[in-house]
Image 1 (cartoon, rainbow, N blue to C red):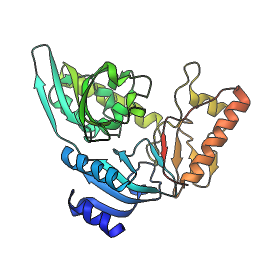
Image 2 (image 1 turned 90 degrees about the vertical axis):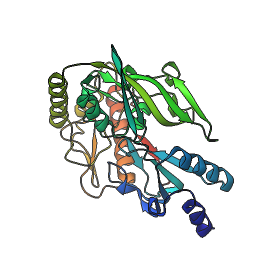
Image 3 (image 1 turned 90 degrees about the horizontal axis):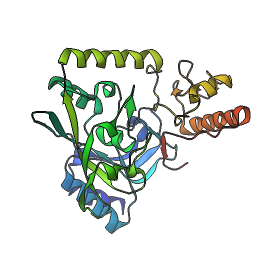
Length: 305
């Protein structure tokens, strides 16, 4: 059966884009995760459509990922297909008042910010240091220092689970803090069109550098991590609650609550997903005990135990 699936996959995508029994630790910023049965890189919309049809016909489960920067894959790995979108095309359309960039979901957000800079376009400066893809950024309504994806998105092109393509207006994205309609609608984002304002290149670059420096100063970028582990609390920063519980530096195995920013958990070497999840539960338990507050995950957890 496995050989038959491999042969069918090779008829859809390039052989070099198919990886069997692939460690997901290679594909997440946490550097954690068990084996995926198949890890497949998709370079065209047609390839994606054919893969979804194959998955449906053969009853193969699948997961869509970008750069794996907000992701924790459990130690048991992922059954079926992991599909990594490599849709990276982009085009800038300049008009008199504003400019539009139509960009593939697989393009790194940092690269999009640089494209905006090169074209003298403002609105993505603070996104330059965010490590995910455009698709992941929209799914999570990524943002930093007052800028969010919801502020620039005009519409997106998506594919449903049957391979049908549709367009979503800004309103249908249902953007909220670090969430969007993509968490529940089952659509796969293919490309999006954003609207940016004209600005001065030197001012745009200066703001980008300032945002990058703030990230370097305040976040534990020197260790593998998946960004902020918990969703923001409006009343009190989650990191402060965790810090006030005395949990900075608390470790289970090689998983540690960052000593630089308590809202992050870092991989100090060979942390497992199990260790990270145990640490998360301990943090939630302590915050609940001391402050009577429930805190929720911002990262996405997938895979088998």
